[in-house]
Length: 264
Image 1 (spheres, rainbow, N blue to C red):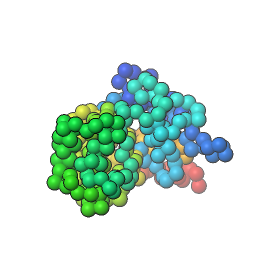
Image 2: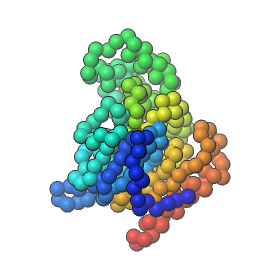
Image 3: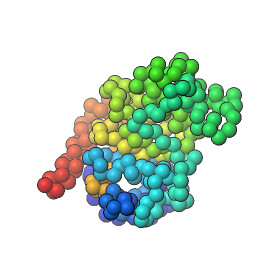
């Protein structure tokens, strides 16, 4: 059921991300995030939904260390976030592949930027490409791939070093429905192998309910509601057609609609 967020549980050894009164405002005083209190445990898959401009991407960038809160703190495994960390992988809305590199070298980029690529690294990259279904495209260039194939390559790159956490900003938004569902299943399968902690932004409520352990609603820079998806995992494709799936989707829609009506 939908619950109001009004308190911060005690951080434990199993907490991965901890937002403690984290706020972000521009120099002109425009506030993007206001006093975010939120704990994300290790191995959790939390989805963020909300209207455009509500602060979802800014929150993700604080977790990634790409931006810093103007007030409050963000911690990863108890350590204050001061910049990007190898513990955290990032997948953007666009694949951000380098056009002059073949797929295999794009996947290997997180390693090649820091040291020489070894045979074992290449084997690992090929194994990941096989896991996402495009190992036969390893030598092609991004311009030769479809949007879905580029997204698969971007996912493989993010997982190459098997970071303990993934931050994903609408990675499947531009894809057709069938490809999007296939990639959702690929993602769930891969992150379950290592119990990866995932924070996933989407505008699609059905995607959030299918993927998430919890779906968090943001409004005007605040976390306003959370819904726990306390259903079996793995859920499988037929989960989308179960009554419980529809109930959760409708509950989140009603929570978002209620917030909008309160503002009118």
